[in-house]
Image (cartoon, rainbow, N blue to C red):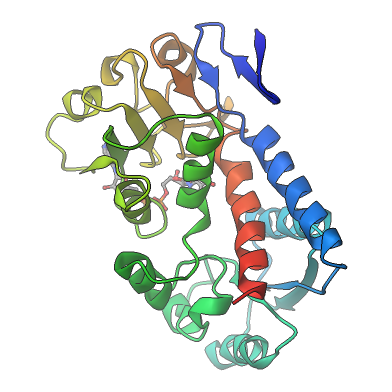
Length: 293
Ligand code: NAD
């Protein structure tokens, strides 16, 4: 089923929930960015990517980030290091990118091969160029409400909520998972001024997850446990956003049991096709913002 509210196309699941389509919104955001950059006379805005080793999923992620950067009107510059690169070599490459004024954003693809200390590498990136928003200083800025880049996955969740007119102010949100990559920054973004949700952080030691989630108007599931969130966890009409990715024999599965949950939820993201594409779109938005800092 589809409906057309103002110029926005909205699709619904067979259960009647709004389908929060991350692919569609990513394409919209990237097209907007390309238009904006073209209107500014195509300034060179460069995203530098660093990949150490030949991990296949990391190669796929980097390729799709490079492709989307070009579509957004950004330049992408890739730095490939061998799997046997030393800590000093990796730090040397990142330090050069930090010094290079033609580089606006730096993305170090994680995880790094065993034996390399990712924290020390990330610590070299100043907040202005940290378009992934994952360093200690970027996280500090987020906590203190200072200008900087928020981590792309939780930022993508906020964009989906905005795009599909899901109110957050005064609403109860439950974030499942407390990692520094997703859960913790998600709590900050939902609870900060402007978003104004009342946020509960659930994790592996939460005593009754279903009961906790049933209180939520918005659930963000980022535990990495296939089909953890069932209809029993969902208040009728709630918005359910799936961040988790589990690779199973039947393909990629999220933290949300999509079919049954979409019968109860008011809005839901697909997996794949929800938060993943939005992570990449927000990386491009952060890179554009970096060029203005
Ligand atoms: P993580 O392993 O660091 O954190 C998982 C969190 O889930 C932990 O805080 C843990 O306390 C919590 N948890 C584990 N079992 C639980 C349970 N039974 N009930 C409640 N909470 C539980 O993982 P992460 O890096 O935060 O990633 C989470 C998931 O999101 C992974 O599947 C990852 O692949 C995925 N991910 C997706 C995107 C995207 O773009 N969609 C981006 C990053 C991560």
